[in-house]
Image (cartoon, rainbow, N blue to C red; front, side, top):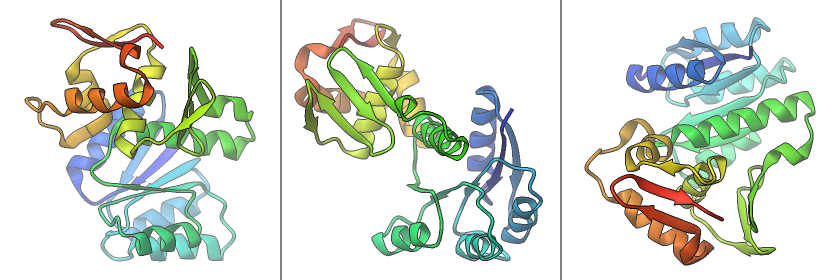
Amino acid sequence: MNQILIAEDEERIAQFVRKGLKAHGFQPTVVSDGASALAHAMSGGYDLMVLDIGLPVLDGFTVLQRLRDVGSTLPVVILTARDSLSDRVAGLEGGADDYMSKPFGFDELLARIRLRLRRATGEAASSERLEHGDVGLDLRTRTATVAGREVELSAREFALAEVFLQHPGQVMSREQLLSRVWGYDFDPGSNVVDVYVRYLRKKLGVDRIETVRGAGYRFRG
């Protein structure tokens, strides 16, 4: 069971991530400031850290720098509201393995965590792809292909396509898709799922996503 350190000072987000990871078989631990995050990360008892940048005491950039300065190779996924290009570059060049912006979908975070854990253990690259029919998703490069042709998807479109390819042939309700792709910050009355399904149909093919009246959507590939 992988031990995941969650360094997040916003309680609602921290508990959302903790509960989600626990439900998927991980053993999560939450800390709410940078000094505690650094101490826990340095203990050697964790397989990966989900790190917020805007932490009190020590910010996430400082935590990351101190970890890397002592030679720690602990995989770090930054999860932050700071989404400027300069912050993203600073995080990745500072030694982060991945960088995600809030608001976020839990399934995308989960996929990135699993990918970083696989890379850390040297697992085969084939597990970094999802395929159904002639639609493929590369979870490492975040690229999509249809019949061998690359299709450009936005981050949300990719996350929605990823959920569909993880559950081919299964009816997914709007509420399930909202929760998995838009995460903790979704409005149950929103029509955003319908909007993004239309986007995906235009890019992947109109007949690939079936509307199941009164139930949701099903990916047929």
